[in-house]
Length: 307
Length: 249
Ligand SMILES: Cc1cc2nc3c(=O)[nH]c(=O)nc-3n(C[C@H](O)[C@H](O)[C@H](O)COP(=O)(O)OP(=O)(O)OC[C@H]3O[C@@H](n4cnc5c(N)ncnc54)[C@H](O)[C@@H]3O)c2cc1C
Ligand SMILES: Nc1ncnc2c1ncn2[C@@H]1O[C@H](COP(=O)(O)O)[C@@H](O)[C@H]1O
Image 1 (spheres, rainbow over the protein chains, first blue to last red):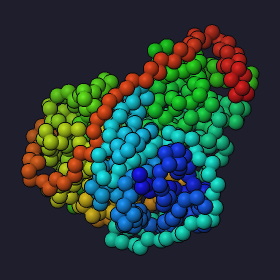
Image 2: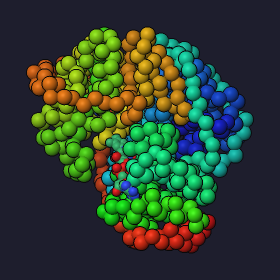
Image 3: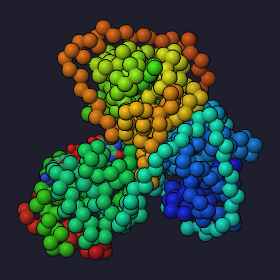
Image 4: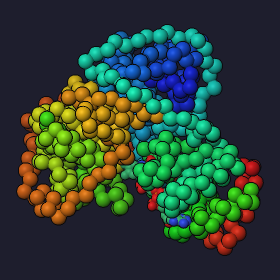
Protein backbone atom coordinates (compact mmCIF):
# COMPACT_ATOMS: atom_id res chain seq x y z
CA UNK A 1 0.00 0.00 0.00
CA UNK A 2 1.54 3.34 -1.03
CA UNK A 3 1.80 5.27 2.18
CA UNK A 4 2.72 8.63 3.58
CA UNK A 5 3.81 9.06 7.18
CA UNK A 6 3.30 12.49 8.72
CA UNK A 7 6.25 12.91 11.02
CA UNK A 8 7.13 15.43 13.69
CA UNK A 9 10.34 16.85 15.12
CA UNK A 10 11.32 16.76 18.76
CA UNK A 11 14.63 18.05 20.12
CA UNK A 12 16.35 18.06 16.77
CA UNK A 13 15.30 14.57 15.75
CA UNK A 14 12.17 12.56 14.90
CA UNK A 15 9.53 12.45 17.64
CA UNK A 16 8.99 9.11 19.37
CA UNK A 17 5.52 8.85 17.84
CA UNK A 18 7.03 9.14 14.36
CA UNK A 19 9.63 6.48 15.13
CA UNK A 20 6.88 4.17 16.39
CA UNK A 21 4.94 4.50 13.14
CA UNK A 22 8.12 3.83 11.14
CA UNK A 23 8.52 0.52 13.01
CA UNK A 24 5.04 -0.58 12.01
CA UNK A 25 5.47 0.63 8.42
CA UNK A 26 8.72 -1.31 8.03
CA UNK A 27 7.27 -4.47 9.61
CA UNK A 28 4.45 -4.33 7.09
CA UNK A 29 6.79 -3.57 4.17
CA UNK A 30 4.80 -0.48 3.35
CA UNK A 31 6.09 1.55 0.42
CA UNK A 32 6.29 4.80 2.35
CA UNK A 33 7.58 8.32 2.24
CA UNK A 34 8.05 10.45 5.36
CA UNK A 35 6.88 14.05 5.43
CA UNK A 36 8.06 15.74 8.60
CA UNK A 37 6.44 18.90 9.92
CA UNK A 38 8.29 21.14 12.32
CA UNK A 39 9.60 24.54 13.28
CA UNK A 40 13.17 23.60 14.30
CA UNK A 41 16.18 24.52 12.16
CA UNK A 42 18.21 21.73 10.57
CA UNK A 43 16.89 18.76 12.54
CA UNK A 44 18.51 15.36 11.94
CA UNK A 45 15.56 13.57 10.43
CA UNK A 46 16.83 12.19 7.12
CA UNK A 47 17.29 8.62 5.99
CA UNK A 48 19.26 6.74 3.38
CA UNK A 49 16.60 4.04 3.07
CA UNK A 50 13.41 6.03 2.57
CA UNK A 51 12.52 9.45 1.23
CA UNK A 52 12.17 12.26 3.75
CA UNK A 53 10.74 15.71 3.11
CA UNK A 54 10.88 18.41 5.76
CA UNK A 55 8.06 20.93 5.75
CA UNK A 56 9.68 23.72 7.71
CA UNK A 57 7.17 26.06 9.35
CA UNK A 58 7.76 29.36 11.06
CA UNK A 59 7.19 29.34 14.83
CA UNK A 60 5.67 32.81 14.46
CA UNK A 61 2.55 31.73 12.67
CA UNK A 62 -0.11 29.04 12.62
CA UNK A 63 0.29 27.72 9.10
CA UNK A 64 -0.61 24.04 9.35
CA UNK A 65 -3.52 24.59 7.02
CA UNK A 66 -1.20 25.64 4.21
CA UNK A 67 1.04 22.69 5.06
CA UNK A 68 -2.07 20.56 4.58
CA UNK A 69 -2.57 22.05 1.09
CA UNK A 70 0.93 20.89 0.15
CA UNK A 71 0.28 17.43 1.55
CA UNK A 72 -3.02 17.04 -0.30
CA UNK A 73 -1.19 17.78 -3.56
CA UNK A 74 1.49 15.22 -2.75
CA UNK A 75 -1.07 12.57 -1.78
CA UNK A 76 -2.93 13.04 -5.04
CA UNK A 77 0.16 13.19 -7.26
CA UNK A 78 1.69 10.07 -5.72
CA UNK A 79 -1.61 8.14 -5.51
CA UNK A 80 -1.10 7.59 -1.80
CA UNK A 81 -3.57 5.10 -0.31
CA UNK A 82 -2.61 5.27 3.35
CA UNK A 83 -1.75 8.28 5.53
CA UNK A 84 -0.37 7.68 9.03
CA UNK A 85 -0.15 10.41 11.66
CA UNK A 86 0.41 10.50 15.42
CA UNK A 87 -2.25 11.41 17.93
CA UNK A 88 -0.62 14.75 18.80
CA UNK A 89 -1.66 18.39 18.44
CA UNK A 90 -0.01 18.66 15.05
CA UNK A 91 -1.03 15.18 13.92
CA UNK A 92 -4.67 15.76 14.71
CA UNK A 93 -4.79 19.23 13.18
CA UNK A 94 -3.17 18.10 9.95
CA UNK A 95 -5.26 14.92 9.65
CA UNK A 96 -8.43 16.90 10.23
CA UNK A 97 -7.55 19.38 7.49
CA UNK A 98 -6.53 16.67 5.01
CA UNK A 99 -9.61 14.57 5.61
CA UNK A 100 -11.95 17.25 4.27
CA UNK A 101 -10.01 17.71 1.03
CA UNK A 102 -9.67 13.96 0.53
CA UNK A 103 -13.27 13.29 1.62
CA UNK A 104 -12.02 10.51 3.89
CA UNK A 105 -12.78 10.46 7.58
CA UNK A 106 -9.71 9.65 9.70
CA UNK A 107 -9.81 6.71 12.08
CA UNK A 108 -8.60 8.14 15.38
CA UNK A 109 -7.00 6.53 18.43
CA UNK A 110 -5.77 3.56 16.44
CA UNK A 111 -3.55 1.19 18.45
CA UNK A 112 -2.90 -1.32 15.66
CA UNK A 113 -3.77 -2.05 12.04
CA UNK A 114 -3.51 -4.97 9.68
CA UNK A 115 -3.43 -5.08 5.91
CA UNK A 116 -4.77 -8.07 4.00
CA UNK A 117 -4.65 -7.45 0.28
CA UNK A 118 -6.65 -4.29 -0.13
CA UNK A 119 -8.46 -4.62 3.21
CA UNK A 120 -7.20 -2.51 6.06
CA UNK A 121 -8.47 -3.37 9.53
CA UNK A 122 -7.89 -1.01 12.43
CA UNK A 123 -7.94 -1.72 16.15
CA UNK A 124 -9.10 0.79 18.76
CA UNK A 125 -8.89 0.37 22.47
CA UNK A 126 -12.22 1.02 24.24
CA UNK A 127 -13.63 0.65 27.77
CA UNK A 128 -10.37 1.87 29.26
CA UNK A 129 -8.52 -0.89 27.45
CA UNK A 130 -10.79 -3.77 28.39
CA UNK A 131 -12.05 -4.28 24.86
CA UNK A 132 -10.74 -3.89 21.35
CA UNK A 133 -12.88 -2.48 18.57
CA UNK A 134 -12.15 -3.58 14.99
CA UNK A 135 -13.23 -1.83 11.80
CA UNK A 136 -12.44 -2.05 8.11
CA UNK A 137 -11.66 1.26 6.45
CA UNK A 138 -13.32 1.46 3.05
CA UNK A 139 -12.32 4.84 1.58
CA UNK A 140 -9.77 5.04 -1.27
CA UNK A 141 -7.40 7.06 0.85
CA UNK A 142 -7.24 5.84 4.45
CA UNK A 143 -6.11 8.20 7.19
CA UNK A 144 -5.12 6.69 10.53
CA UNK A 145 -4.26 8.67 13.67
CA UNK A 146 -2.09 6.42 15.83
CA UNK A 147 -1.95 6.55 19.62
CA UNK A 148 1.53 6.98 21.06
CA UNK A 149 3.30 3.89 22.43
CA UNK A 150 1.29 1.56 20.23
CA UNK A 151 4.52 0.24 18.70
CA UNK A 152 8.16 0.16 19.75
CA UNK A 153 10.18 3.13 18.53
CA UNK A 154 12.34 2.32 15.51
CA UNK A 155 16.12 2.48 15.93
CA UNK A 156 16.58 3.45 12.28
CA UNK A 157 19.77 5.42 11.60
CA UNK A 158 18.98 9.04 10.84
CA UNK A 159 21.05 11.24 8.57
CA UNK A 160 21.07 14.69 7.00
CA UNK A 161 19.60 13.22 3.87
CA UNK A 162 16.31 14.99 3.28
CA UNK A 163 14.83 17.82 1.27
CA UNK A 164 13.36 20.90 2.90
CA UNK A 165 10.33 22.77 1.69
CA UNK A 166 8.58 25.76 3.11
CA UNK A 167 4.93 26.71 2.85
CA UNK A 168 3.40 29.91 1.67
CA UNK A 169 1.29 32.03 3.95
CA UNK A 170 -2.37 31.85 2.99
CA UNK A 171 -5.55 33.60 4.14
CA UNK A 172 -5.91 31.19 7.00
CA UNK A 173 -2.48 31.87 8.50
CA UNK A 174 -2.64 33.43 11.96
CA UNK A 175 0.27 35.29 13.54
CA UNK A 176 1.64 34.11 16.84
CA UNK A 177 2.77 37.02 19.00
CA UNK A 178 4.16 35.14 21.98
CA UNK A 179 5.77 31.72 22.38
CA UNK A 180 6.33 30.14 25.74
CA UNK A 181 8.62 27.12 26.04
CA UNK A 182 8.02 25.14 29.20
CA UNK A 183 11.23 24.24 30.94
CA UNK A 184 11.75 20.50 31.13
CA UNK A 185 13.98 19.18 33.86
CA UNK A 186 14.56 15.70 35.20
CA UNK A 187 13.37 12.44 33.64
CA UNK A 188 10.65 12.88 31.01
CA UNK A 189 7.35 11.05 31.21
CA UNK A 190 7.59 9.41 27.81
CA UNK A 191 10.91 7.73 28.29
CA UNK A 192 11.40 7.20 31.99
CA UNK A 193 11.61 3.65 33.37
CA UNK A 194 9.67 4.62 36.48
CA UNK A 195 6.69 6.96 36.56
CA UNK A 196 5.05 8.18 39.76
CA UNK A 197 1.65 9.75 39.32
CA UNK A 198 -0.45 11.73 41.71
CA UNK A 199 -4.21 12.05 41.91
CA UNK A 200 -6.68 13.92 44.03
CA UNK A 201 -5.90 11.45 46.81
CA UNK A 202 -2.73 13.42 47.51
CA UNK A 203 -5.29 15.75 49.14
CA UNK A 204 -3.39 19.02 48.80
CA UNK A 205 -0.99 20.53 46.27
CA UNK A 206 1.54 20.96 49.07
CA UNK A 207 1.77 17.19 49.47
CA UNK A 208 3.19 16.85 45.99
CA UNK A 209 6.54 17.48 47.65
CA UNK A 210 6.41 13.81 48.72
CA UNK A 211 5.91 12.74 45.12
CA UNK A 212 8.89 14.89 44.09
CA UNK A 213 11.07 13.43 46.82
CA UNK A 214 10.10 9.89 45.92
CA UNK A 215 10.71 10.59 42.25
CA UNK A 216 14.14 11.97 43.12
CA UNK A 217 15.06 8.79 44.99
CA UNK A 218 13.85 6.50 42.21
CA UNK A 219 15.01 8.68 39.32
CA UNK A 220 11.41 8.69 38.16
CA UNK A 221 9.29 11.03 36.06
CA UNK A 222 6.18 12.61 37.57
CA UNK A 223 2.69 12.42 36.13
CA UNK A 224 -0.80 13.31 37.27
CA UNK A 225 -4.49 12.88 36.60
CA UNK A 226 -6.63 15.37 34.78
CA UNK A 227 -8.35 16.19 38.05
CA UNK A 228 -5.15 17.63 39.52
CA UNK A 229 -4.04 19.23 36.26
CA UNK A 230 -7.39 21.01 36.06
CA UNK A 231 -6.95 22.04 39.67
CA UNK A 232 -3.67 23.67 38.66
CA UNK A 233 -1.43 21.40 40.77
CA UNK A 234 0.61 20.37 37.74
CA UNK A 235 1.11 21.59 34.17
CA UNK A 236 -0.88 19.90 31.43
CA UNK A 237 2.30 18.40 29.98
CA UNK A 238 2.33 15.99 32.91
CA UNK A 239 -1.19 14.68 32.45
CA UNK A 240 -1.42 10.95 31.87
CA UNK A 241 -4.44 9.53 30.09
CA UNK A 242 -6.77 9.77 27.16
CA UNK A 243 -6.31 13.49 26.69
CA UNK A 244 -2.79 13.53 28.06
CA UNK A 245 0.24 11.34 27.59
CA UNK A 246 0.47 7.60 27.18
CA UNK A 247 3.23 6.00 29.20
CA UNK A 248 4.57 2.46 29.32
CA UNK A 249 7.27 2.42 31.98
CA UNK A 250 8.66 -0.62 33.79
CA UNK A 251 7.01 0.62 36.98
CA UNK A 252 4.02 2.94 37.40
CA UNK A 253 3.16 4.06 40.91
CA UNK A 254 -0.36 5.53 41.20
CA UNK A 255 -0.77 7.59 44.36
CA UNK A 256 -4.32 8.52 45.30
CA UNK A 257 -5.71 7.86 41.82
CA UNK A 258 -9.16 6.33 41.40
CA UNK A 259 -8.35 4.77 38.04
CA UNK A 260 -11.01 6.22 35.74
CA UNK A 261 -11.00 4.59 32.30
CA UNK A 262 -9.68 7.84 30.79
CA UNK A 263 -6.68 7.64 33.09
CA UNK A 264 -6.18 3.91 32.56
CA UNK A 265 -5.84 4.21 28.78
CA UNK A 266 -2.72 6.26 29.37
CA UNK A 267 -0.94 3.87 31.72
CA UNK A 268 -2.45 0.40 31.86
CA UNK A 269 0.25 -1.12 29.66
CA UNK A 270 2.96 -0.26 32.16
CA UNK A 271 4.88 -3.44 33.04
CA UNK A 272 4.34 -3.31 36.80
CA UNK A 273 1.66 -1.17 38.42
CA UNK A 274 1.65 -0.23 42.09
CA UNK A 275 -1.46 1.54 43.39
CA UNK A 276 -1.97 3.23 46.73
CA UNK A 277 -5.56 4.20 47.47
CA UNK A 278 -7.60 4.27 50.63
CA UNK A 279 -10.72 3.01 48.90
CA UNK A 280 -10.57 -0.76 48.59
CA UNK A 281 -13.04 -0.62 45.67
CA UNK A 282 -11.08 1.90 43.59
CA UNK A 283 -10.96 0.71 39.93
CA UNK A 284 -7.19 1.23 39.83
CA UNK A 285 -6.82 -1.97 41.87
CA UNK A 286 -8.26 -4.00 38.99
CA UNK A 287 -5.15 -3.32 36.95
CA UNK A 288 -2.59 -3.10 39.74
CA UNK A 289 0.07 -5.76 40.24
CA UNK A 290 0.52 -4.55 43.78
CA UNK A 291 -2.37 -2.76 45.46
CA UNK A 292 -2.00 -1.10 48.83
CA UNK A 293 -5.21 -0.05 50.54
CA UNK A 294 -4.17 2.85 52.70
CA UNK A 295 -3.44 6.53 53.11
CA UNK A 296 -0.90 7.95 50.66
CA UNK A 297 0.12 10.54 53.21
CA UNK A 298 1.18 7.82 55.66
CA UNK A 299 2.72 5.41 53.22
CA UNK A 300 4.74 7.61 50.87
CA UNK A 301 6.79 9.46 53.53
CA UNK A 302 7.74 6.10 55.07
CA UNK A 303 8.65 4.74 51.67
CA UNK A 304 10.93 7.73 51.03
CA UNK A 305 12.58 7.31 54.41
CA UNK A 306 13.32 3.63 53.87
CA UNK A 307 14.50 3.64 50.30
CA UNK B 1 -20.87 39.06 16.24
CA UNK B 2 -22.54 35.67 15.98
CA UNK B 3 -21.11 32.65 17.74
CA UNK B 4 -21.98 29.00 17.26
CA UNK B 5 -20.88 26.64 19.99
CA UNK B 6 -20.96 22.91 19.32
CA UNK B 7 -22.23 20.73 22.12
CA UNK B 8 -22.89 17.04 22.15
CA UNK B 9 -25.36 15.01 24.17
CA UNK B 10 -23.78 11.84 25.53
CA UNK B 11 -24.91 8.94 27.73
CA UNK B 12 -24.41 9.67 31.43
CA UNK B 13 -20.66 9.13 31.94
CA UNK B 14 -21.31 7.55 35.34
CA UNK B 15 -22.84 4.56 33.57
CA UNK B 16 -20.55 2.43 31.43
CA UNK B 17 -21.08 2.55 27.69
CA UNK B 18 -22.68 -0.43 25.92
CA UNK B 19 -22.60 -1.26 22.22
CA UNK B 20 -24.88 -3.07 19.75
CA UNK B 21 -23.41 -3.84 16.32
CA UNK B 22 -20.54 -1.55 17.13
CA UNK B 23 -22.79 1.41 17.88
CA UNK B 24 -22.97 3.13 21.25
CA UNK B 25 -26.38 2.52 22.80
CA UNK B 26 -27.90 5.93 23.43
CA UNK B 27 -30.65 6.25 26.02
CA UNK B 28 -33.45 8.80 25.60
CA UNK B 29 -31.99 10.87 28.35
CA UNK B 30 -28.52 12.06 27.44
CA UNK B 31 -26.53 14.77 29.17
CA UNK B 32 -24.30 17.61 28.03
CA UNK B 33 -20.76 16.40 27.43
CA UNK B 34 -18.68 17.88 30.20
CA UNK B 35 -15.89 18.84 27.79
CA UNK B 36 -18.31 21.10 25.91
CA UNK B 37 -18.90 23.24 29.01
CA UNK B 38 -15.48 24.78 28.44
CA UNK B 39 -16.35 25.82 24.90
CA UNK B 40 -19.69 27.21 26.07
CA UNK B 41 -17.93 29.21 28.79
CA UNK B 42 -15.59 30.78 26.23
CA UNK B 43 -18.59 31.58 24.00
CA UNK B 44 -20.35 33.28 26.91
CA UNK B 45 -17.30 35.36 27.81
CA UNK B 46 -17.15 36.54 24.19
CA UNK B 47 -20.89 37.22 24.27
CA UNK B 48 -20.41 39.53 27.24
CA UNK B 49 -17.60 41.44 25.54
CA UNK B 50 -18.99 41.70 22.01
CA UNK B 51 -22.70 41.52 22.76
CA UNK B 52 -22.73 38.45 20.57
CA UNK B 53 -25.54 36.02 19.92
CA UNK B 54 -24.67 32.47 20.98
CA UNK B 55 -26.29 29.51 19.23
CA UNK B 56 -25.77 25.97 20.46
CA UNK B 57 -25.36 23.46 17.65
CA UNK B 58 -25.87 19.78 18.24
CA UNK B 59 -26.20 16.64 16.19
CA UNK B 60 -27.45 13.26 17.36
CA UNK B 61 -30.34 11.53 19.07
CA UNK B 62 -32.45 14.30 20.59
CA UNK B 63 -34.38 12.28 23.18
CA UNK B 64 -35.44 14.38 26.15
CA UNK B 65 -32.97 17.12 25.08
CA UNK B 66 -31.62 17.30 28.61
CA UNK B 67 -28.11 18.05 27.37
CA UNK B 68 -29.39 20.81 25.08
CA UNK B 69 -31.24 22.37 28.00
CA UNK B 70 -28.07 22.22 30.11
CA UNK B 71 -26.24 24.17 27.42
CA UNK B 72 -29.01 26.76 27.23
CA UNK B 73 -29.10 27.04 31.01
CA UNK B 74 -25.48 28.13 31.05
CA UNK B 75 -26.54 31.18 29.03
CA UNK B 76 -26.61 30.40 25.30
CA UNK B 77 -29.41 32.18 23.44
CA UNK B 78 -30.86 29.41 21.30
CA UNK B 79 -30.14 26.03 19.79
CA UNK B 80 -30.06 24.41 16.38
CA UNK B 81 -30.34 20.63 16.53
CA UNK B 82 -30.49 17.79 14.04
CA UNK B 83 -31.39 14.11 14.27
CA UNK B 84 -31.70 11.82 11.27
CA UNK B 85 -31.35 8.05 10.79
CA UNK B 86 -28.76 8.74 8.07
CA UNK B 87 -26.55 10.38 10.69
CA UNK B 88 -26.55 7.51 13.17
CA UNK B 89 -23.03 6.42 14.07
CA UNK B 90 -21.54 9.19 11.95
CA UNK B 91 -17.79 9.29 11.53
CA UNK B 92 -15.98 12.54 12.30
CA UNK B 93 -16.20 13.83 8.74
CA UNK B 94 -19.96 13.30 8.51
CA UNK B 95 -20.31 15.03 11.87
CA UNK B 96 -18.20 18.00 10.88
CA UNK B 97 -19.91 18.27 7.49
CA UNK B 98 -23.27 18.59 9.24
CA UNK B 99 -22.00 20.93 11.97
CA UNK B 100 -20.46 23.19 9.29
CA UNK B 101 -23.81 23.44 7.56
CA UNK B 102 -25.49 24.31 10.83
CA UNK B 103 -22.84 26.93 11.65
CA UNK B 104 -23.68 28.52 8.32
CA UNK B 105 -27.38 28.49 9.16
CA UNK B 106 -26.50 30.27 12.39
CA UNK B 107 -24.42 32.74 10.30
CA UNK B 108 -21.63 32.22 12.78
CA UNK B 109 -18.47 34.32 12.65
CA UNK B 110 -16.83 32.26 15.36
CA UNK B 111 -17.45 28.53 15.85
CA UNK B 112 -16.38 27.04 19.17
CA UNK B 113 -15.77 23.41 20.17
CA UNK B 114 -14.49 21.23 22.96
CA UNK B 115 -11.22 19.51 22.15
CA UNK B 116 -12.65 16.02 22.05
CA UNK B 117 -15.95 14.47 22.92
CA UNK B 118 -16.12 12.04 25.83
CA UNK B 119 -17.74 9.24 23.85
CA UNK B 120 -16.28 9.70 20.36
CA UNK B 121 -12.96 11.38 21.13
CA UNK B 122 -11.68 11.58 17.59
CA UNK B 123 -10.57 15.13 18.35
CA UNK B 124 -10.62 16.22 14.71
CA UNK B 125 -14.10 17.68 14.27
CA UNK B 126 -13.07 21.31 14.95
CA UNK B 127 -10.22 21.14 12.44
CA UNK B 128 -12.53 19.62 9.84
CA UNK B 129 -15.18 22.28 10.36
CA UNK B 130 -12.57 25.02 9.93
CA UNK B 131 -11.61 23.46 6.62
CA UNK B 132 -15.20 23.12 5.43
CA UNK B 133 -15.87 26.74 6.33
CA UNK B 134 -12.53 28.09 5.10
CA UNK B 135 -11.79 29.70 8.48
CA UNK B 136 -8.54 29.86 10.48
CA UNK B 137 -8.39 27.16 13.15
CA UNK B 138 -7.17 28.03 16.64
CA UNK B 139 -7.06 24.62 18.27
CA UNK B 140 -6.32 23.57 21.88
CA UNK B 141 -7.10 26.95 23.41
CA UNK B 142 -6.39 26.80 27.12
CA UNK B 143 -6.75 30.44 28.07
CA UNK B 144 -8.62 33.52 26.99
CA UNK B 145 -7.81 37.08 27.90
CA UNK B 146 -10.45 39.57 26.91
CA UNK B 147 -9.03 43.04 27.29
CA UNK B 148 -8.60 45.45 24.38
CA UNK B 149 -8.33 42.63 21.91
CA UNK B 150 -9.12 39.01 22.60
CA UNK B 151 -5.98 36.97 23.18
CA UNK B 152 -6.11 33.21 22.98
CA UNK B 153 -3.44 30.98 24.50
CA UNK B 154 -2.92 27.66 22.73
CA UNK B 155 -1.46 24.55 24.27
CA UNK B 156 1.53 23.25 22.28
CA UNK B 157 3.82 20.30 22.74
CA UNK B 158 6.63 22.58 23.93
CA UNK B 159 4.54 24.88 26.10
CA UNK B 160 2.09 27.43 24.78
CA UNK B 161 1.66 30.29 22.34
CA UNK B 162 -0.60 33.31 22.02
CA UNK B 163 -2.59 34.68 19.12
CA UNK B 164 -5.08 37.51 18.68
CA UNK B 165 -8.48 36.05 17.91
CA UNK B 166 -9.35 36.67 14.23
CA UNK B 167 -12.81 38.15 13.58
CA UNK B 168 -13.86 34.93 11.91
CA UNK B 169 -12.42 31.64 13.08
CA UNK B 170 -12.89 28.21 14.60
CA UNK B 171 -11.72 27.61 18.16
CA UNK B 172 -11.35 24.40 20.15
CA UNK B 173 -11.06 24.70 23.91
CA UNK B 174 -9.25 22.30 26.26
CA UNK B 175 -10.59 21.29 29.65
CA UNK B 176 -8.66 23.83 31.71
CA UNK B 177 -7.99 27.52 31.63
CA UNK B 178 -11.58 28.63 31.95
CA UNK B 179 -13.98 27.73 34.73
CA UNK B 180 -17.40 26.76 33.30
CA UNK B 181 -20.21 28.59 35.07
CA UNK B 182 -23.05 26.91 36.89
CA UNK B 183 -26.55 28.12 36.08
CA UNK B 184 -28.67 29.54 38.89
CA UNK B 185 -32.40 28.99 39.31
CA UNK B 186 -33.28 31.97 37.13
CA UNK B 187 -31.06 30.70 34.29
CA UNK B 188 -32.66 27.27 34.53
CA UNK B 189 -36.15 28.69 34.27
CA UNK B 190 -35.19 31.08 31.45
CA UNK B 191 -33.74 28.23 29.36
CA UNK B 192 -37.15 26.60 29.04
CA UNK B 193 -38.46 29.37 26.84
CA UNK B 194 -35.42 29.59 24.58
CA UNK B 195 -35.84 28.58 20.97
CA UNK B 196 -34.71 25.10 19.90
CA UNK B 197 -34.91 24.80 16.14
CA UNK B 198 -34.89 21.37 14.54
CA UNK B 199 -32.97 21.35 11.25
CA UNK B 200 -33.89 18.97 8.42
CA UNK B 201 -31.07 17.02 6.79
CA UNK B 202 -32.40 17.95 3.36
CA UNK B 203 -31.68 21.62 4.03
CA UNK B 204 -27.93 20.93 4.37
CA UNK B 205 -25.28 20.13 1.82
CA UNK B 206 -24.10 16.67 2.87
CA UNK B 207 -21.21 15.07 0.97
CA UNK B 208 -19.25 13.12 3.58
CA UNK B 209 -19.65 9.35 3.65
CA UNK B 210 -19.31 6.48 6.05
CA UNK B 211 -15.93 4.81 5.49
CA UNK B 212 -15.73 2.48 8.46
CA UNK B 213 -17.29 -0.96 8.53
CA UNK B 214 -17.68 -2.45 11.97
CA UNK B 215 -16.03 -5.86 12.30
CA UNK B 216 -16.18 -6.88 15.95
CA UNK B 217 -15.55 -6.00 19.57
CA UNK B 218 -13.26 -8.39 21.45
CA UNK B 219 -12.89 -8.18 25.18
CA UNK B 220 -9.37 -8.76 26.35
CA UNK B 221 -9.38 -10.42 29.71
CA UNK B 222 -7.37 -7.93 31.66
CA UNK B 223 -8.21 -9.67 34.91
CA UNK B 224 -4.87 -9.17 36.47
CA UNK B 225 -4.37 -11.42 39.44
CA UNK B 226 -2.50 -8.74 41.29
CA UNK B 227 -2.04 -8.79 45.05
CA UNK B 228 -3.87 -6.42 47.36
CA UNK B 229 -2.87 -5.59 50.93
CA UNK B 230 -4.49 -3.47 53.58
CA UNK B 231 -1.87 -1.11 54.96
CA UNK B 232 -0.96 -1.77 58.56
CA UNK B 233 1.83 0.71 58.74
CA UNK B 234 4.51 -1.41 57.08
CA UNK B 235 3.42 -1.70 53.46
CA UNK B 236 6.37 0.49 52.44
CA UNK B 237 8.47 -2.63 53.03
CA UNK B 238 6.36 -4.63 50.63
CA UNK B 239 6.70 -1.95 47.96
CA UNK B 240 10.48 -1.92 48.38
CA UNK B 241 10.61 -5.73 48.27
CA UNK B 242 8.64 -5.86 45.02
CA UNK B 243 10.69 -3.07 43.44
CA UNK B 244 13.80 -5.13 44.22
CA UNK B 245 12.24 -8.35 42.88
CA UNK B 246 11.50 -6.75 39.55
CA UNK B 247 14.96 -5.13 39.60
CA UNK B 248 13.58 -1.60 39.44
CA UNK B 249 15.96 -0.67 42.25
C1 LIG C 1 -13.18 13.32 27.72
C2 LIG C 1 -12.47 13.07 29.02
C3 LIG C 1 -11.10 12.94 28.99
C4 LIG C 1 -10.39 12.70 30.17
N1 LIG C 1 -9.04 12.57 30.10
C5 LIG C 1 -8.36 12.27 31.21
C6 LIG C 1 -6.94 12.07 31.18
O1 LIG C 1 -6.28 12.21 30.13
N2 LIG C 1 -6.30 11.74 32.32
C7 LIG C 1 -6.96 11.61 33.51
O2 LIG C 1 -6.31 11.28 34.53
N3 LIG C 1 -8.29 11.81 33.59
C8 LIG C 1 -9.00 12.15 32.48
N4 LIG C 1 -10.34 12.37 32.58
C9 LIG C 1 -10.94 12.48 33.93
C10 LIG C 1 -11.23 11.15 34.59
O3 LIG C 1 -12.52 10.72 34.20
C11 LIG C 1 -11.20 11.26 36.13
O4 LIG C 1 -12.10 12.27 36.52
C12 LIG C 1 -9.83 11.59 36.71
O5 LIG C 1 -8.85 10.70 36.18
C13 LIG C 1 -9.89 11.44 38.22
O6 LIG C 1 -8.69 11.85 38.80
P1 LIG C 1 -8.26 11.36 40.25
O7 LIG C 1 -8.09 9.89 40.24
O8 LIG C 1 -7.10 12.20 40.64
O9 LIG C 1 -9.45 11.84 41.18
P2 LIG C 1 -10.63 11.05 41.85
O10 LIG C 1 -11.39 10.26 40.86
O11 LIG C 1 -11.33 12.03 42.68
O12 LIG C 1 -9.90 10.00 42.78
C14 LIG C 1 -9.18 10.29 43.93
C15 LIG C 1 -8.87 8.97 44.61
O13 LIG C 1 -8.02 9.21 45.72
C16 LIG C 1 -8.42 8.38 46.79
N5 LIG C 1 -7.97 9.05 48.02
C17 LIG C 1 -8.45 10.18 48.59
N6 LIG C 1 -7.71 10.52 49.66
C18 LIG C 1 -6.74 9.58 49.77
C19 LIG C 1 -5.68 9.38 50.67
N7 LIG C 1 -5.42 10.23 51.66
N8 LIG C 1 -4.90 8.30 50.48
C20 LIG C 1 -5.13 7.43 49.48
N9 LIG C 1 -6.11 7.58 48.60
C21 LIG C 1 -6.92 8.64 48.74
C22 LIG C 1 -9.91 8.24 46.66
O14 LIG C 1 -10.30 7.00 47.24
C23 LIG C 1 -10.10 8.25 45.14
O15 LIG C 1 -10.11 6.93 44.62
C24 LIG C 1 -11.07 12.60 31.42
C25 LIG C 1 -12.46 12.72 31.44
C26 LIG C 1 -13.16 12.96 30.26
C27 LIG C 1 -14.64 13.08 30.33
N1 LIG D 1 -22.63 15.27 17.42
C1 LIG D 1 -22.08 16.42 17.79
N2 LIG D 1 -22.83 17.51 18.04
C2 LIG D 1 -22.28 18.67 18.43
N3 LIG D 1 -20.97 18.85 18.61
C3 LIG D 1 -20.15 17.81 18.38
C4 LIG D 1 -20.65 16.53 17.96
N4 LIG D 1 -19.60 15.70 17.82
C5 LIG D 1 -18.50 16.40 18.12
N5 LIG D 1 -18.83 17.67 18.45
C6 LIG D 1 -17.89 18.76 18.85
O1 LIG D 1 -16.59 18.44 18.38
C7 LIG D 1 -15.66 18.31 19.44
C8 LIG D 1 -14.68 17.19 19.13
O2 LIG D 1 -15.39 15.99 19.04
P1 LIG D 1 -14.75 14.60 18.62
O3 LIG D 1 -14.10 14.81 17.30
O4 LIG D 1 -15.87 13.64 18.62
O5 LIG D 1 -13.72 14.27 19.65
C9 LIG D 1 -16.52 18.09 20.68
O6 LIG D 1 -15.88 18.55 21.85
C10 LIG D 1 -17.78 18.89 20.35
O7 LIG D 1 -17.60 20.25 20.66
